[in-house]
Amino acid sequence: MVRLACERATDAELEALAKFLTESATESPDASTDRLIELDIGFHDTLAQLANNRILRKTLSNLDDRIHLIRWIAMEGRRDRTQGEHREILDRIRARDTDGAVAAIRMHIIHRKDDILAAIKAAYGHVYTLSA
Image (cartoon, rainbow, N blue to C red; front, side, top):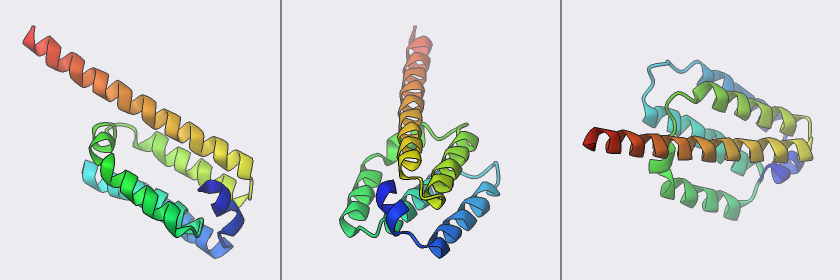
């Protein structure tokens, strides 16, 4: 997706995404988890739009629907890092640094996976500690 965005996105589209990131960073620290997920999905959906690939965007939307609960579980307390990673991805795309953009999104995905696993482990640990 980011490879195609590097190739196909216009400077104006990238500027609009940068504006979205700046505005989303000002969202209240008390914003609901649902609102934070909405912003996260907005970033990734826009990347798919910038790739100008309808099938890819539909696939991403389908995936978003399937992992909504998992996203919700692991959203708390990770906003700053996620915002920074989104900014890094965008900066690489704006520089038309395809390899750098791919590396940045891979690290973003790995961090989210690690966050999700840690949140699930913590939840199980809490449940089993309470029942002991």
